[in-house]
Amino acid sequence: MKTPVIIALDFASKAEVSHFLEPFNGERLFVKVGMELFYQEGPQIIHDIKEKGHRIFLDLKLHDIPNTVKSAMKGLARLQCDLVNVHAAGGQEMMMAALEGLEAGTSGGQKRPLCIAVTQLTSTSEEQMKKEQLIQVPLQESVLHYGQLAKQSGLDGVVCSSHEAAIIREVLGNRFLTVTPGIRLKEDAVGDQKRVATPELAKKAGVSYMVVGRSITKSNQPVESYQKFIHAWEGVQL
Ligand code: C5P
Image 1 (cartoon, rainbow, N blue to C red):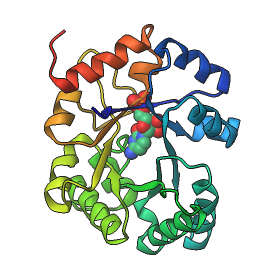
Image 2 (cartoon, rainbow, N blue to C red):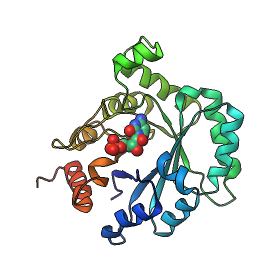
Image 3 (cartoon, rainbow, N blue to C red):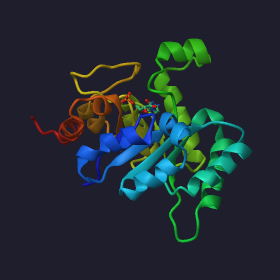
Image 4 (spheres, rainbow, N blue to C red):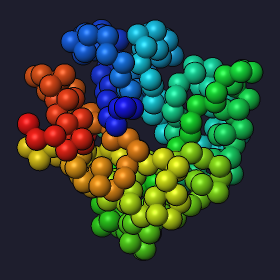
């Protein structure tokens, strides 16, 4: 079975990543490298993690003018990650440019990385969206709109919260990926996230992948915590 959990490696150094991954004993994981790690360790960290056999979501959330995003994606494609992303708010032209860049940077015979769009961050509440972004429609409608824009641009899916995943699947189809951060077990701290959900709810909503960070990376027993998320998803009572 494919793992439903993408572990967010929100660490500042390669040493911390190695220390975290060690107890997983060579188990092949799907991990997310975000800004914190990538900005400090650079592209070499991707090669190091790939060498260990893990799949990688490179979460750099590109958002700039189309030409810049295209060039950046061309370079990132050479790292051969499995999944990359942009902000849907950058617009259709920017998203299409991202795909062009990825295709241009993928050598013959290789598969281009899948590309998904961030809709509304899971740390954004509807109230904040209305007040700060001046978007007056309900949050779910804004997320769906960004999803539609991403699909029209040819992207492979979106980052959204589990609360919007079901409507995205219903409207945009099962094959359009929904990758959902803000996942917490009932007993976990919410932190800065606003639109949180349990793995059980995420599964019911039909999400493709749950992104889990602190609940696993800050745990005293990360392997056990990782397994708790898998078991909760599978409906196994512990
Ligand atoms: O620690 P936590 O489980 O909240 O981590 C969630 C991860 O998902 C973080 O790395 C964060 O940057 C990322 N993320 C998010 N919301 C989005 C997109 C990415 O929380 N919309």
